[in-house]
Image (cartoon, rainbow, N blue to C red; front, side, top):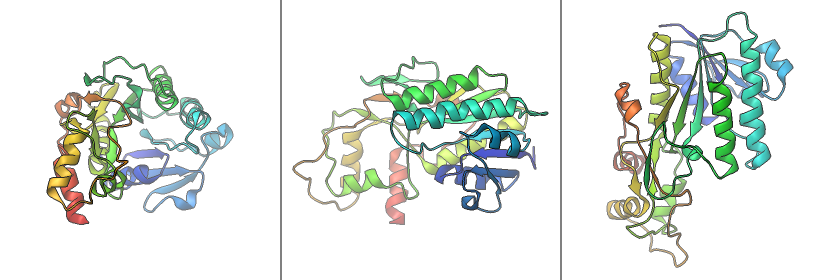
Length: 283
């Protein structure tokens, strides 16, 4: 379906890239509290998810909505306000429209999983997050899937690439130096985060039936120690610092992306090697 109307609710770094990619074939509205920060050719919408009145007055009628939010503050209140209350207000406003969207997509995270012993997780795995960020994301997911408008959740693992080079810099400067048996980590290059979202949105617009949830992570969960070892063999690095971090800070699990691949998405960067090699070439 060409020339669909799509609302990008939340137009930060990732949301802008998704919106701009979709704008090549569709009419995309970008919603922020500061509409001046929405890039052209997106149509800016100035509204606040925590202000139901502004939502009711300014939300356009669209074919699809993508909710891609960043909390104002990274504490429990910030996550609850942005994801739980924000999602609730948005869904209420969309439900009251004369023609609600055909589907709402919510960008979530593998933070909804608490598994930390190297277990494989997929879309059907138990979700019992023990931190407030994962709890807020899970509650927002549940608000969407329990509502009357069809919804699809996309759970991203750690996004890297295109300026998201904090972890790579720490590996190169010796600030991270785990042993080979350290915990498993999961990641997705930003190009694949954008690509997989656009792929699913376009499938929905074409009338393809989607699952309620997709886990979007590359095809090789890897122990952090092995990632660091590969980096240190590939590029000149600083000596390991005496106080270098020894392991991942987000537990140890392995994300299974089979459902996304079986839907037809082909990864641009199927493992960390292709993704980090691309970053090193650009640098």
